[in-house]
Structures are given as C-alpha cells and as structure tokens.
Length: 604
Image (cartoon, rainbow, N blue to C red; front, side):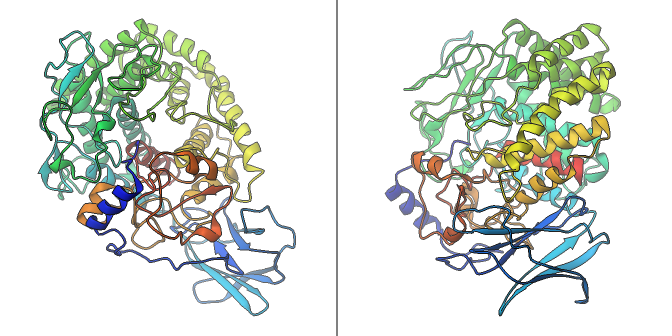
C-alpha cells in the first residue's frame, strides 16, 4: 500500500482528468469550516452491537454549560444529565471533550443524543443493533473482490495476464513464472505474499470461529449469485490459488509481483501501462524469496530470512486443509494445500529471519522485522492439521520467543515493522496447548496494558501511535482484546475494545467511519483508489489507512491535498483527509480490510 506517488502538478492534472472533485454516487459533500462548531457530538455512526463500554463524546472549543438528553425513537427523554465542566482532554483547537456513557441504551432501536447549551444545540443519532457489525462484513468482502487480479469482477475484465518474469532465485533472471491471480495490495497494483498470506489466514480464521456471520451471495469468480459456499471462503480460495502458484516446487517460493515502477499515475488494472523492461503493460517482475537483501533499483531491503512468509503461508495452508478436507470434491485441493504448507514451513525453519518487501525508486517498503510469531502460528496450525508432535514443540518454542513482542506502547514504529498487527499464533497455540493458555494470555495482556496507558492520555481513548496505517493498529489492538477475551473469559477490557471499535466507526474528531462508501453513514467518499477515481463508481468497505501525526504527513513524499481541507477545524494530534491525493490517510488496503473482517466476526 505504498500509494501512487507523484508530483502535485501531475497529480492534480491526472485527478482533473479523472473527474475528482465531482460528488461520487452516495457522496455527502462536507461544508468548509474554519473553526470548530460550538458544539458537536461524536458517536459510532454505524451502530452499536451492544452498549457495554460505549460512550458518546461531546466536542466544543471551550467548556460548555448545559445539559445532555438521551431520547428514544419517539423523542421521549429516558435520561438526562448536566454536562461535566472538566474536559477529558484537548485535541487541536477542540479544547473540550465530555464522555457520555451509553450503557443505559440496552434495547435495540434508534436513539438520539441531544446537547443543549444556552441557545446552541447539537445532536447525533445512535443506533443499537446486534447485527450492526456483521452487516458491514459483506461490504468488506466486496472491497476484497474489487482488489482481485486476473479476472476482476468489479471491472468485468482480465488484468495482468502476463505476470511475470523472475528476479533472484534459482532460474536465470527474466524466466517466466506463473504469478497470475491474487489481489492488488492497495491503490497500486502490486501483489505481496507478505500481506496476502495474512489476509488468507485471517479470513479462514474468521470463518472457523464465526461461520454464522457469513453469507453466500456471490460465486467463486466474484459474480452475484450463490454457489453453496460462504463468500469469505470464496475470497480465501482466490488467495490460496495464487499462493500455490508462488510455490511451484518443493524448494521454490516467490513473494512479490511488481514494485514501485507501478506508480505511474492513476490507471485501471485492465489497462496496465507500467513497463518493467518487457514493454508497457506486459510482464512484471516476480521476486524470489531467497532470504537476502533485495532491490533492483536505488533501495535494498534488509532481509535476513524467509520465516515470516513461511510461517504465515503454512498457517493459511493448514487452515485451508482443515476447511476443505471433509469435502470429497475438494480433497485433492486440501491435500495440495497441506503439502505446500509443510514444504514452505520447512523452508522457513531452515532460513529463520524476515523477507521484507522490495522497492525500486522509492524508499517506502514493507519493513517487517518479526518472524517468530509467524512460525508459531504456522506450527500450531500444522499441528492441528497433522497431529505431529514436532509441530507443537516448535509452536511452543516460537511462542515463547515471540512473547509480548509488539508495536503496542511504542511511540515510534517503522512501516509494517511488527506485521501482522496482532499475533494470531498465540491464540492458535492456546487452543492446542491449554497448559500454556495463561502464559499466552499474559503476553496479550502485557501489550494491552501498554496500549491502555496510551489510551488514558487521549480524550478518544485511542491506544495506538499515529503512524502510517494507524487504523490497522486500532484493528490489531481491538482484535487482541477480543482474542484474549475468548482465551480467558475475562471482559475487563470491554471499554477499551469499544473505544477502538467506535474510533473506526465515527467516534473520532472528524465524525466519519473509516470504511469507504458506507451507504447510510459519513464515510470516505474520495479514497486514494484508482478504480474509484477512474470509473466514478463507489467501492464499499475498504478500510483506509487512517490518521497520521501531522509531522508524519508533512514528511511523506508526493502526498498533498486537492484543495482546502474541510476538516481543518478538527485536525489535532493527528490529521485525516477524505481526499484522493492523500495516500497516507485515505488509501484503503487489502490487509487492513481483511483484518477488519476478522475483528467484526469476533465481536459482531
């Protein structure tokens, strides 16, 4: 998700040609503001599946003297209170935040929060519905379908049929490798095993834990129409088929298709123009995972091994085996997945370390530095699939090596340094090694406590650093809390989880959900996404990167805005812009969206 970087002049020219600035279908144009409203109310704009730990926030430039009313659908006041004089903290020019407990709303239905301060009033609709989150899952999966490479159902066309030609590895440079399929990573059209392996593992885990929340409305190709299989499994299968192609023999693994030479402006994947040396729109480079620093241009990675990729690959393939092994029609596929998983896991065990993403002319790449959590996950899932004790022994060893290692509590984190943003290995191991459950839950708890300390300093109770892809960290924190709850039955962190969930869904300074084109809620309408900008069609459900610290935004290359910032009054410790030119906060990503599927399945 490196973004389509370009000069401001070139970007504005391209966007003008694409029609950016026009209101896309379903768009809600935001009025320009130069100062915060006297009073505003921020809530989860989608709906609360339950109100345990849920809070609304009243915002103002200065302390308010007034009252707050909770009203039911008929307008009857069911609770009223005096606004507190003390602020829960400041955010930029918004100096006053008052948290309002919504726990009294224990029945499903529509409510209103109404604030009256002198002659000024503000209000917000509050919806309580047990299906609020699961109702978002089909939209999340529709974003993933729109990211498909090969046959793309959103465009009803074929893209990147020439992928690709090898770099590094056992064959001469430029050897053909069949790397068709998979998913485009974000607004650009690169494909990474680094992210896709996590996507597949998370989708299959979500279905294993909560099969009841998934629907069957599309076929295997992503076209409307049921096919007897949950859509989440169709999507996982799309990624698995690509992952199998990246492992054409027992000792081969490829990990990335294309690089930032793809960043040549807005383009539809079916109309590729990038040239990797074999002609515009032709073959793209396919990088072999050799566990060493790589880079065909100015910048080299800091790779040290392949265990991060191998562990996630093995976990996804073992989960696939268990998903399809009991279907006689799919047994051959299930066995192929298990064999690939065991072979790639062995490669990772022999080459411990990380294989990072590759860049060419840009310094931005996936700089993952952790791998023990991935090998723990792969070993635990292989043990569950095979019953072989050696895998359990490995999982326990890697789990203790991983411990509480996490981004949580850190002020500075490099781009994807601690990917994935939650350790699913601990959860998988706890299920097969109950004697370690308390130890593994304690590792989760240590990270959660560090995040809680950060959240205590924020009026929004947000527990993550505002670095690039901060929304992915929010999802990771909420998921870690949800997994620990499942492991222990302890719900003491419910309020912290609710704060992270509601930040993603509108209880934030900007009053917008962080998922694109939600039909009945404020949400990103101008995402940094080629398919939206070039077709004018909305793409529902993509989790955007989310706010970054102002200094981070100022430091990034090629990021700008297309015009005045309508949310300027609400920028503070971090900034967010619903602007197609801002790839740092408004680009929806493959892995972030898939991780949200898992989160909403767990808590919806």
